Length: 206
Image 1: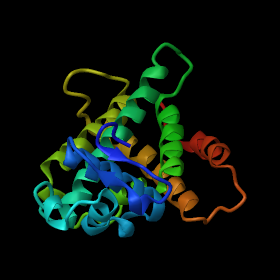
Image 2: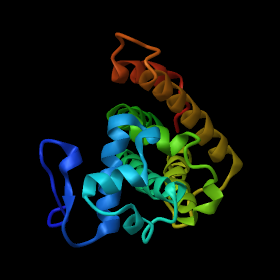
Image 3: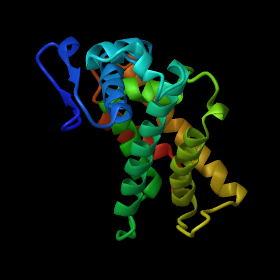
Image 4: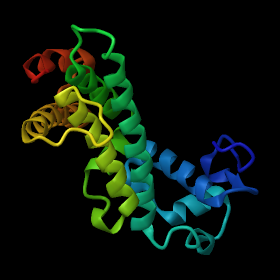
């Protein structure tokens, strides 16, 4: 909830917008809708209803639902990039630590904690990512963390050698597939973090 912007009650349909930043309030409600029902549950009309504003007011900030979902995906990739960077940085003081394995664990934790957000970020809900420059930038920044881990370099431009890119893609594909299986309920009764640790033993490390 955004302090000074919304007042929450027991029924989310009774939430009312009072003053302040309507765009931020819409994004906060969109994040709640993602948690409740995934990308399919996110609409400007429902967000407006929960905030107690007219549907017309929402279009001053988002031209359509795709723009709304794109903005929510940006927030998701920013949080994802931060989680990946924190995992990477935590390994830098330890000679025996594997950055890619640490980031792989953080990846699975991220997906399990927020499956609705994860599905929006990596699924087809945003029709054309190229139409969202901010989203493309957020995706690039998140993938940069993997490339840095793959090459163990943290220079301003990040690593560009082909081997680092291939190493990054192998690790990313491995943990993404596991994350998707977990949140889709294909591995019932399994503890996600234990699975991740076991699977990541096969991940390349540098």
